[in-house]
Image 1: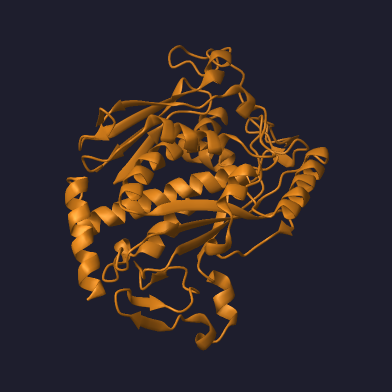
Image 2: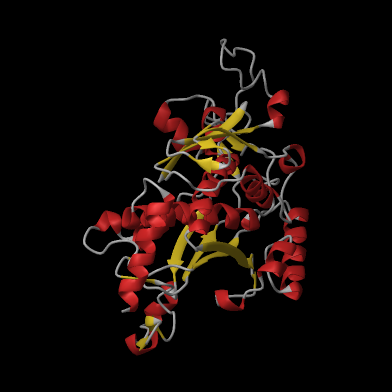
Length: 382
C-alpha cells in the first residue's frame, strides 16, 4: 500500500489516492472523519482550524462499506477556498494578484523559489503548508482500517511541548482516554496544564513552540519488515515516513539516542520463551524493531518537531525582488501544532505498517491475509 496527495493549502480541495489496498477491508467514512477531527483540534492551533470542518469524501475503491481491491480516492474540501478564489485561480494571468516576496526562515519558501524559478513564494508555500497533512491523515485512515482488521492498533500521545515534558512514557502505561480528552494529547493533567501555559506565553511573545510526540503500535507479529535489503528495513521506512511530516526534525525508535550512552547489556532486550506464547523480550529498549523487522513487542517511535517557522514577530529576511532586508512574511499560523502532528505521524506509521503486512501476508484479499496471518502465528508458536 502507498499513497499520493495533491492540493494546495488554499486551493479548492485536497486529494489522497491510496493504491495497493486489499479487497474486503471494512472502511467507514465516519472513522476517517474522526481522525481528521483529531488532527484539527489541539491547544495552540490558529484561525484556519476555526474555518475548516474537514470531512473526507470517498470517491472510489469502496462499495457497500468495504474496499474492492482498486485504488481508494478521497477528497477533502477547503472551506477557505471561497476567500481565495482570485489568488488561487487555476486560470488567467494573475497579474493583479499580490505576490509574496519575503521568504520565511525555516520554511521551504526560499529554497523552493530557487529550485523552481518562481518569483512568488506563494507558489511554494501553498503546497509546503502543513494543510496538506489532512490528506495524509485521510490516507492513513485506509491503512488503519486494514491494520484494525489484522489486530494491530496504532496510537499516539505528546511527551513534550517546549521545555515542559512528561516523558518518555511506556505505551502500556499511557491512559489513551486521558490523551484523547486532552487538548495537548498529554495523559498527565498537571503537565498538560503547564504545556498550555507555555503555549499561551509563546503566543503573547509572538513566538511558536515545538515538542516531542510518540507513536506506538501493538498487536504486531514478529518478522514484519526485512533484513536482507536496505529498502525493506522497517525502521528505515518508519523514520523516512515520519520525517516527511512538515517540521519533524528527528525520529528515534525505542531508546534511540539514549542508547548511545549505555553499555550493550543495558540496551539489548533478553529473549525468553514460554509454551503457547513463543519467543518474547523481557524488556523493550529496541522499541519493537530489531534488524529491520518487528520483534513482536510494541513499536515505540518518537519524533521531534521544531517550532513552526511562521512567527507573528517575524525574523529578518531578504526581498526576492530588491534583495533588501525585510521582515519575513506572515501567514495565518498556529502557535503550536505538536498534538496535530502526532495524529499525522500516526497516519504515516499506519501506512508503513499496512504496506509491510501486505508484503508479508499478501494483499489481494483481506480474508486470505487473515488465513496467512493465522498460519504464521501457529508456526512461530510451535
